Image 1 (tube, one colour):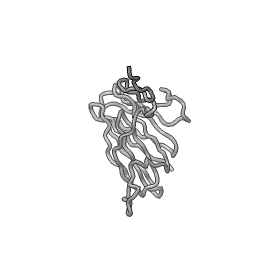
Image 2 (image 1 turned 135 degrees about the horizontal axis):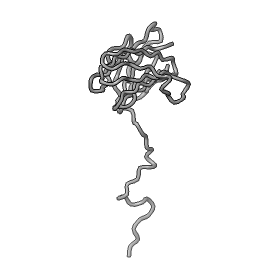
Image 3 (image 1 turned 60 degrees about the vertical axis):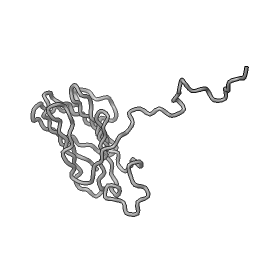
Image 4 (image 1 turned 45 degrees about the vertical axis):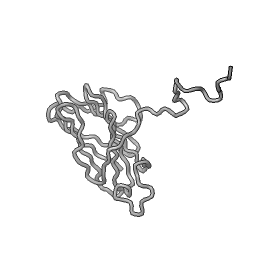
Length: 164
């Protein structure tokens, strides 16, 4: 199964689109250039793979085709009648800066396609998806387990003040 990403560039710089290459760092030789001001491009991503779009001055956008994985915290676990989004089997995660889009679509979809546009100020905009649904979610960029969270003003546990 594959997804297709259609890209439109309205930004003042060329964009670089990098297809998946077995997890190796993207190289300029492997990129597809999407010309500035109305350039168009397309990436195809297989299940378990990802693609990267570089927007000069803004950073990278990552599209991950996660297959049948699920971000369980964004689904209603106790609902008697799950909505269409919850019933879709396939998952794609689109991450840009500190924003994420969570796209789910059915395995039966013949064509799973997303349209993305980079506007004139470098903002990536979701155009449409051919099937399924999209939710904006917030995933942490860095997770620090509570054991490492230290309050310097707190008294260490087990050390009570001794009376004088």
